[in-house]
Length: 341
Image 1 (cartoon, rainbow, N blue to C red):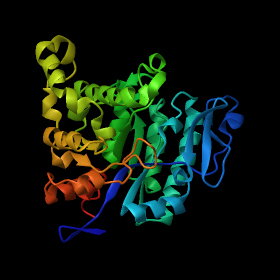
Image 2: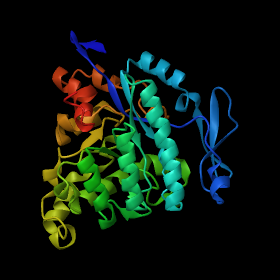
Image 3: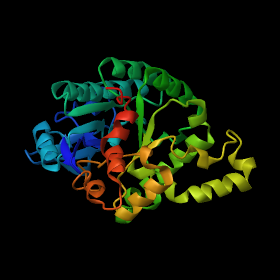
Image 4: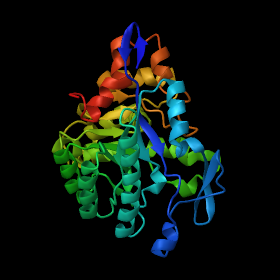
């Protein structure tokens, strides 16, 4: 904890990723390729490999708890919410194999949280391509102490309003489990291979796709007690809400077929993290979504994350001290269902 205008506040980073140091050879175990493995590992870094090709190089703070805790101390971060790296979702694989990968990751994250209960809270992953298996593992995640689940912005190109996922939403609501939605398998990736465009352009658009699908599909209406958060400040959605509302008003025959509530009514009904990379964008986010809907999230330990988690919030002269407390920890506790703890 640290002082803010003479008061003691927490700093909870809701968007961080972790990977086990030693990953089983899932491709060999299951008999087909596509699963992540680690190669060229040193004490400082390693390569994530898929289909025998390097996906990305990661630093040791992706897997080393010691390095992670040192960074947290340096950044004055009190608690991290740990979630899997989205490339580990494995929705494309056989559902029973994805379940085994999910269980491995979920047990790892739960174990990290149990070893450091004052530093880490955990989110799990599920075989979302099979809702029955997903719900079974969701229940187990609850049993082993995880606070919620991270899912992708689409499940094998099915949007998140698809009826297949409604039983999962009902189960998450009943179990009081939070949901963190992170972009992956971005639409149009094959058309924008250069310039890192899938990450720079595709991810914001993909997250907006997820938000709009859930609004138009009535997910927030049908499951009003779900606590859902979107990564990267909700992507491009907050910046196109005027266009989305205009489409709803002008073409209800296309936009209001499953939910006749104006999309603007859902502002403040879900959470987003604060990772928007500029003070102007953060100020806009607060104005559009409201200060109770935004939580510190840094995308630690990846290069597109905030280098010093929470610095943009803490250093702002425009954000009221009470709003800073909301962004730094109060909203995170609310999203995680821990505001009474």
